[in-house]
Image 1 (cartoon, rainbow, N blue to C red):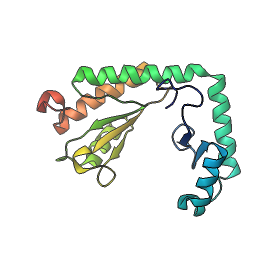
Image 2 (image 1 turned 180 degrees about the vertical axis):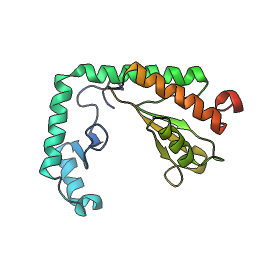
Image 3 (image 1 turned 45 degrees about the vertical axis):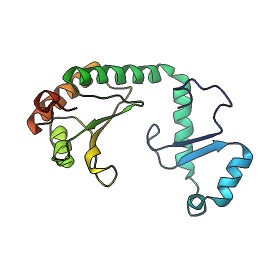
Length: 179
């Protein structure tokens, strides 16, 4: 996030992250000054009632960090894929403006998100659904997680299938004038 917003060293006092997204692990981290981290360690209820990370999780995360450091082109490719996919969705009329590699695509409240997700899975496109109570009822969505390893063919297939499924379920912007 700091890199995304062009913030230099020392501009952010506390950094928090998860290992479940990029590293496909469990747990997360908090980094900051010794005093700040010690305060969290001694007073944060979530810390007091949690366990230390397993050594295998730590090893996997460290290997992932080493891999990313050795292959910065993967991060650039991820950004390229996000941009390409977003342009494709916008060309269909969807109003999307993701700030990360997770692209939310709103699904009208009248539809069952699980049905839309299942239809996309049958079409060979993996997405997650996010619905109430994780989000307000009128903010249910598909959660499209972009990857650096996807090819243009993969992305074009996904865009085509999203177009087809959105039309089938009646939430394509051309049908309803919504995004």
